[in-house]
Image 1 (cartoon, rainbow, N blue to C red):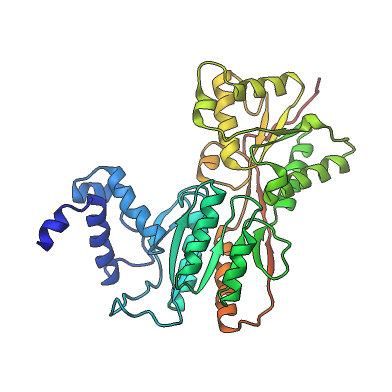
Image 2: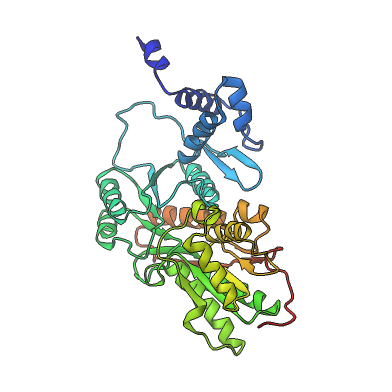
Length: 381
C-alpha cells in the first residue's frame, strides 16, 4: 500500500525526498556545490524542469541556498527532524518569510540562504510563503501565519502598504517582525533595507560623468506606493539638480502596468517599444530603470527596434542580477546576503530579549559600471 502511494507521487517529490535523506545523512558537504539539474535529470531519468523543481523546493524550505554565479549549496546546519509529530511546545522554532515573488527572482535566494543558515544555527526552521502581486493575498497570508505557531516573521512587502493591523497582532503575541526592502516610518517595527537613495545618486552621477544631460527615470512601480523606488528616484533628482539641471516631467516615465517579454520582443511595435523610440526622438540619451528586471526588458526592446545600447541610449538598472551581468547592464549591487544575516540577527536578539529596541538598518550599495553605460557623449541635440 505504501509503495503504491509512493509510485503515485510526482517525480520531483520522489527526487526531493531522496535528496533530503542524503543531505540529512551527511552525504553532501556544505562546502561543495550541490547536484546540478543536469546531474539529477540524468541520474533519475527525468526532464531538467523536473530536476529544477526538486532543487527549488529544497531552496524554499531553506535546506539549500544559492550562490550567485556558482550554484546551490547545502545550508551549513540542517534543522533536525522532530522525533514526534506532536512536538509543538509553546516556544515555536518556525520563522516565516513572506515574499511577493518567486524565490528564483532577482537575488532574493541569497537572502534566503543567509537567513536560513543563521536561523538554523540556533535550531530554527524557515518557512517561505509567496503571495504574488496581490495585496489581499498578502493580508490573508499574514492572518493565516498569525493563527499558526510561528516564532517570528520576516516580511518583504510588494508595496508600502504593510498591513499594519495584522502586523500589530504579531507584536501583541510577542512574535517579532522584520520588514525588508521597503522603508517604514513605523517606530516600533524592525527594518532592514539597502541604501536605495544613495544607489540612485551613484547611478545618476555615473551617467553625468559620462557626459549625459538628458537622463530619464523609468519605472513600472507607482512612486506614491513604493518607497524603494521612490528613494532611487530621489537620489536621481538630487544629482541632476546638483549638476545644474532643472528637472521636468519628461524625466519621469511611470509605465502603467507590468511589462513582459512580449512587450519587448514583439515584431509589431508595442506601446512600450514606441515609448522608447519617442524618448530617443525627444533627446533622451540615458535611462535609469527602477530595477534590473525592467532594465533587461528595455535592453531587449531596444535590440528589437534597432536602438543601440550604449550608442543610441545608455542604460542602468538596479539589483545586479545574473541576467544584467550577462547583458552587461550597469547596475547597483545590493548585499542580499547581509539583508538575511541582519534580519536573522534582529529576530534572534528580540526572541531572547523582547524588550530590545527596534532597529532600522540601512546597508550600503555599490555601483557596478558595465558596457551599457560606458560611452562619452560629444554633443547632444
